[in-house]
Image (tube, rainbow, N blue to C red; front, side, top):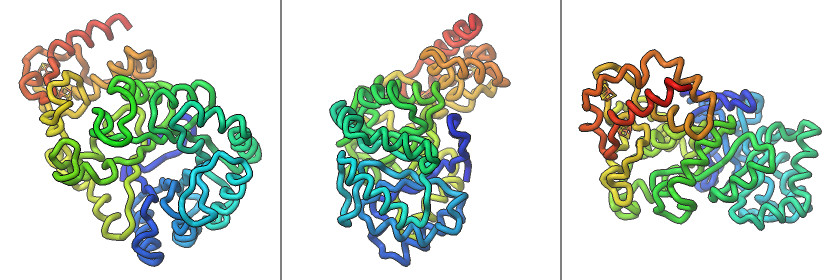
Length: 365
Ligand code: SF4
Ligand code: SF4
């Protein structure tokens, strides 16, 4: 397992976490074994926007002994007191649900208390008006909530809430389908979505990623919006290459499914390469660098994806990205304009020209 640090909280978070939407489906005993296998495999981050309340006692039993070594995302607005998941903006309902969740989880604190599922500006206005945000702040003051999160699928709502609330973790739906306008939660234009990633990176807000496989649709030729399947591992690599992302949260309900996820780190560069998406409409010939490094090897040894990521962050105002760029052993100034990357890039990026542009920009910084 590899870990990333949430710059706002200092938490060391596994790149792969577990989402709980169908955790309960394989039965209690298998789910408990699955969660323990996940923990043994180094996974320390778990999202509790569960599909059903039955998931909570499973977590409580599986992980209460290692509670101080793991992180829970708990959602203010998800109500499980009737069993099935319900969405609520009623303060008393939410207070009751949070109390119930903590009891089931056998814990008395919440690592990331989430402003849950805000997809309309009106959701946020009601959330505040009904005193739910103040309730999270009150619990934070008391030490029950350690940090604040926000879950949303919608860039314009995310920007508004990040402007107004002190958010430490954003839960956002990211996959190649949504990023290019394909799928149920493909909210926002490509540029708006990329701007969210860069904003989070710049402000040190971590991103935890829900729906990494678009509800499984991307994994099957028949359901993929592109008519062509990607693998679990290509989707995970795509997500983890995005600025700001700390952790992907695939669902898993059995030991076998957890072990499949953990194989991510055994995969070769070729198996993780997601450049095939460049052959899909509407991504074809986008001319945008997605930091995939498919253009490697550069004869000079430049990490082309990383140089581009720092550049995109820098031009959006991220000063830290400029500093990171300057610590690279090799950067755009080392480019000899050989053109190898131009011929290898499946996204039609004129990378040698871009290297010149990056070099000139960074020389002035
Ligand atoms: S230039 Fe093309 S191949 Fe290279 S990292 Fe960017 S998108 Fe990937
Ligand atoms: S053009 Fe520059 S960045 Fe691209 S492969 Fe050649 S030396 Fe590397």
